[in-house]
Length: 170
Image (cartoon, helix red, strand yellow):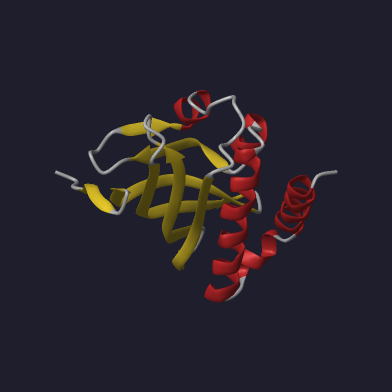
């Protein structure tokens, strides 16, 4: 079994066996949410569409900074079938969690980097950073991701900021 599959199995086991963690303190819920994002990343990298769907509420919607909405089905259908680029690195950091009854509002930051080559062979570095506000719901003892609103998105190419978007609800 590969290292990533072992990690996925461990993370999924922890998450499946510990739904009650969400009933504790904010720090334990923050740790649980961080584990959920990490396990989702492993599942996504494995291109496991069925496994991915288990993290989401069926009515999940993602809203980008321009206000474009993407459903869970659209997101999963749009996932590439090719393996992830080994030169691509990304990670999600849970910045804060606020729980109100069976709903948790989670603020995250996703940072990523892809290093490639321009057609002339010179290096090409793309870095992105996004900050999102996510809503998770506790249903049947499991936290499911219901809504993601990307509040800000920045893209740098070779160190130069080329895109900066901020969500506007108007």
